[in-house]
Length: 321
Image (tube, rainbow, N blue to C red; front, side, top):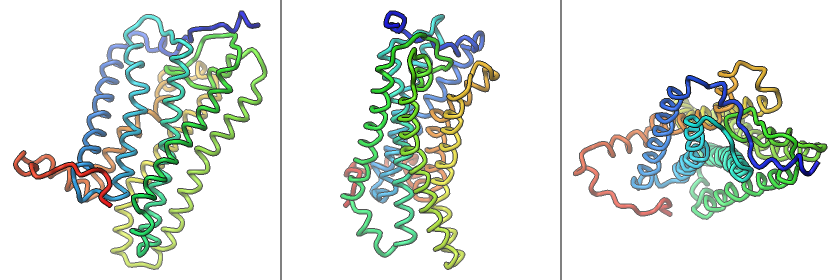
């Protein structure tokens, strides 16, 4: 069994279904990646340089953009490279490294969205205490937790997966996925399945429950307030709601896809569904936060003015407190 488990390279078989479309897919993917990097860098720079945006909510938007760059960079360069090659082999180290990056990216996204939900909850439901609650110290603590916990949780899952003896090398995806690797094992994987489900519940379902709770409280508050107040809350919360909804749908598509035999599906559909969570949020986030929030729109318009209008900007740090 040990000899059969020495599979030093994984074969990403879904690339074979792309076939003659590899060059159009490469061009389209390169444009997507360029847009993701450009749009998120612009969001980061605008918020960093515009002093009026040095507020907790916008700091968290910066975290969201940084995470988008992290996740997309963990996927697109390797994906673009593989599109131009005849073989689609990935070493064990490369495979587990990609799993770690993409899974921590997904976990970071949920923790950051939970932090943003808490920020909106305090701003709407406890507005008089907002500045005393959402201090720089609190934001640092939340950001540190959002960074450490997913790294530990994903690392634990990969520690169990990395010990498995493997009897195969074919992964029916265009990127390495943990459950696809686990299914190649020669031994019982009940413990891996249990640990994976537990970590998924903690990193996905608990944040979703928390976000749902905060918006329930916001809705209860809005019922008793004026139409103008409701409109301001709607404007402030809409980008976050759309982001949570789109990312949740894309994550559940990937989770569902990993539990079925992808090769039985229509290949193009399988590839699209498997890439939603690493493509749609990094594109949607800068569009939603850059165009929907009035303060961001004004800052973006100001940044697009001639250089003489923006020469007074000086970087003073993310936190103004």
